Image 1: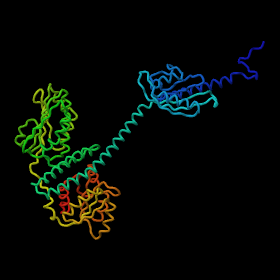
Image 2: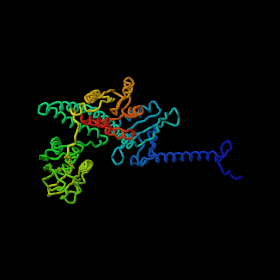
Image 3: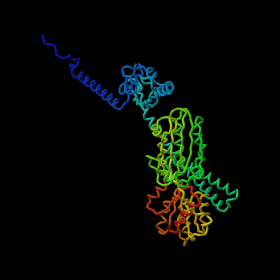
Image 4: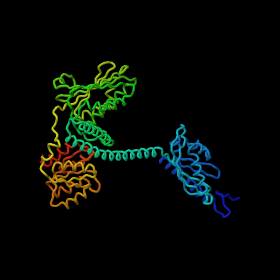
Length: 521
């Protein structure tokens, strides 16, 4: 008998070895492709889901454990099992999307919240494609699922940042326009005070209008500091008046549990500092004190003059030189206080100290009793009152000059024009840079000795106008104005020689700047 063939033979006479090896190779290649796909899904932190709708069975692979804390084989393949992971509020929309794609075929995209193994929800984005039976291979819905929780939070923070920036620009614009109005109010009230006898009742009314506008200016500067801290604008401050003005605000900040008292002192020396910043420093100190007084208590503010000799007797302290004004805030608590170190570490107090030092002052915190902490603020005094030009004495003293005034705010432009014409100058005024250039051509042969211009204007701003005119009129002086604090730094980088006037400004400041520039001082 002949030996049997070593391999089965098909009816055609071919052995089965060849076809089987091709099939095994294809299956092996298919398994390798699947492993590679699963590896890619895992590496990209995504879940691959294949739902065979004919027998309602799903196969999961990829980063299932990372995203949901569930191993792929631990989750039954039924559609309703997956639905049970979805947040109740998202189930209806998800089911609607799936039903629609099963009906029409094609691709789909849906976002929903899914429950992790720890009971917390995460946000998933599922993108997929449904292969209907007509296309062969069975009815399969294949999808890739991505955890987009961090991405959506980042997008939300970005939107919030953009909203804050937009709000900051809006606030800055409103504050800038408000500064123009305040300059007009302050300016006209000062003009009228110069022409009203100080003994008249109207003079007192005008003085109160000026003070109210100055306080409003302080608030405006705080709005302008919404995005960027303003440049320091120093001026003469009567500390008693300042504390009286903000006493109501401090009482509201401290709350009903804390009693507040300010004891004014007569004949205090004035300060030379930024009023809005000093106000802010007192507010910060009050906020910091309140945080260490949960059971309530009492805060008292006093002030006194300190001569240079007296300042030397204050041991272990580095104080500004010269005569000083000392403002003391005493914090008396009903129970024992936190330590001085804890009080000093308060962020509000650190900010206050930084503001005070920017104005050449010092903040010293000490403990006098178990239930009392003292906040001593020392400012250099400004006893010699600087001379400021008054309208009456400078009305016709200056030599007549041609001044080009460019300001887009109508009321502000009229006010500055009034002041300059009262000084005897020829004034060419325009609402923007392009109009100013046109008017100069019409006014030939008049040549401006001084340009007074706002920096932020439509069409052609003050800085570009100044560059243009400085080439035509090299002897022309430049006075730039703005209510935006950063504009002075921008102008400083231009390479132009100029003087700067921060809005809102007093009439005397404008007169002084114009006089110095025209006299070449």
